[in-house]
Image 1 (spheres, rainbow, N blue to C red):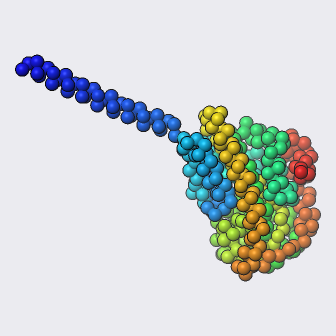
Image 2 (image 1 turned 180 degrees about the horizontal axis):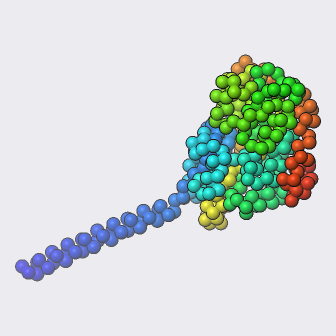
Image 3 (image 1 turned 90 degrees about the vertical axis):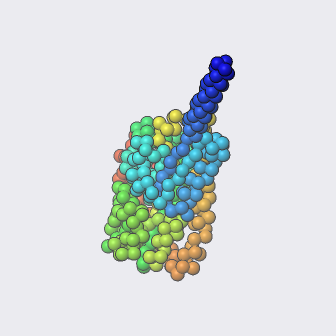
Length: 339
């Protein structure tokens, strides 16, 4: 009887030990899985129909596929994580992993990048892509990274800016007294003035309401953005001034980027390079098709005297050249003439 009780006690102990081992193994497996899966948060201010949101989705899909879902990118569009300045700041400090931000926004921190915001610098969207692959660009990106801790993982065009209004605008003289909504950036205010307008900085998410309520008379955005944000609902004319072709960036927190293995870094860079090309393809398609769309909505698409705007803004690169003088006072001309 005593021996039976001893055997029963031993079996019970073995069962408990086995259960504890299984529990510990399960806990370790769960811990390993958590360590192996990285979720990156990407924030931007654009509508989900915008080319830059679609580009982010494409990059996220590539990264998930190439890493067998070890790295996943969660996208937060439409200013869910803040305004563009707030999203960029949070990324540089590490509370967000990746930001979409324009050259004008990066330029508020790193002055040399403002060279990309000068009027009539780029011929078209593809010119932006060519520049992004140049040695000049690589030097600018690396200096920004060193100073601010932001790794530029993708560069593309944000589109060719056109001016919207409720009456045709043909020359800078037509903008006298015109309240022009511009982004909250030094360069956009400067070129708004140079074009003859009264620039009024307003956040992107608030621009529609500002137009609707008459706070401003018009704004300037690429046609894809005019469609995505439905600005055409509260404006009558799109004037094809083509005054700025914007450069925009995918910026990743550098510490987060450096925490990845070399192979995962390459996957990230390749994914965002592919998405940058895709964004330009989408923008080019929009530029080819949206004139007809806006005319169908009852808007007038006006062809202004572009040369008059070129001449009105021609002095800006010289006026701001001190901002990029470390790279040569001819930096703007070198970018402008790049093939």
